[in-house]
Length: 554
Image 1: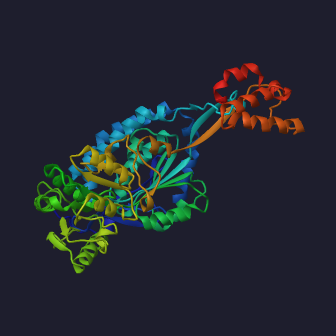
Image 2: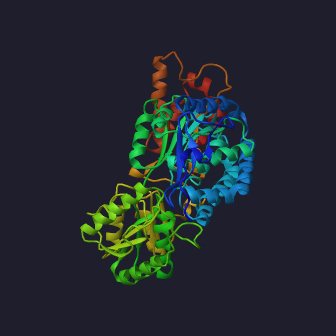
Image 3: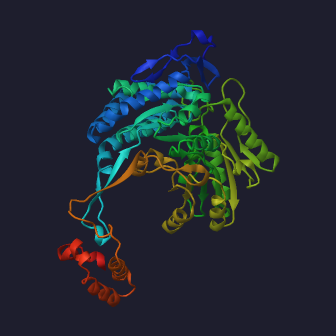
């Protein structure tokens, strides 16, 4: 189904959410373009610089009161948000399909369901995960102090999110920030602004206090101003490596901490004992789901030679069976790429591989007609001199390289500047454990791929160029707080280590060092006996405290 071209002034316009209300931007309008036909179907009004700053104002103003709410109260807000999402799920999935391009069924599976699970998990477990922790002192001289570890919110979290998962990526980040006591300014990608604006509407429907969630439609030229705003407590950026480096450099202006979830060139290793009935369809799904526009898409495969021929044949068969097209024309597995420029990247990578000797077994040419379509493509005879094996393609291309051993496969899989996810396909538990140990990635999955992103307890993030920090799970929630170590001493009088530094005090400390850390038992005991002669020690420590913490002496 094609959408008729309409003048921008005739399109319905959507607005940013600031302090619980829609705000019409003064910075012009940006069309929302359907990647299925390249036609605009709506628009977003863009905030100007002053209005963007007002979104941060609103988040700052609401931060103290939101921080004072209990974790239980914030958890109830997430449950209201979940209820609102359930009511709006079909509408949001349809909007994802229209604005971003993935089929509505996939939007439900990859964006709506993981968001609902994240809301449920955070609401149910945040209180335990952020509970004040008692910290027992190891040093006997400090053991009388009441020590605890607190987890406090950063204040205002700025979330900058991409276009490939315009709902499923930002919503769990927003939820984790909120339940930890932060307020949020969400800046979505330009090409999928309308989907992200629905998060502001959901927050309003769920009754969240004004200013707790702010969603801003701005021109990308204003993004550095948000990043460098000294009132921002933490920045969570998901996107390309190049932009992530710019965000990190800009954040350094105020030493604002950053969490970066960046790209990947995620490998799959197909072992000689792999179950092809599971492996071939699993790898095809992992490569082509969301038209390959996933940071954790399987973008390179290393298959052991003994199983290569039947494996490749099965992959080609599975790939040729995929149904590509726009919504409304029957069941669809693969939609268009979200951006025309992304299709050009795919064409360039495939062209480079062909020029260097790769063979295309299926696909390999952009579809004719409207929309940003590119067919699912399988390449063989590839090697690491080709761009397709080194740089993130972010499209529906699966290059397969035949290797002579598992050792070679692991070496090549780790030969990358990225390290987000990796998958292994084997029937052997021993081989699976080896792959889990030796593959260099933030997530390693055996006989599946991508699924851990939907598991709310699983941390998500990578190493090297794939980013810094983690989202999701306990580690992701801890990214939304800063730890504070606090102690309370209710004793009276001077501490042992306070002034004056007398000669006897120096001998006492020298003896204490041997008593606590001498390499063998009897010298330590001898020093403990000699310490008994120091009145300054006993006046502060006393036999009762010493006996209570005698375990810390050994």
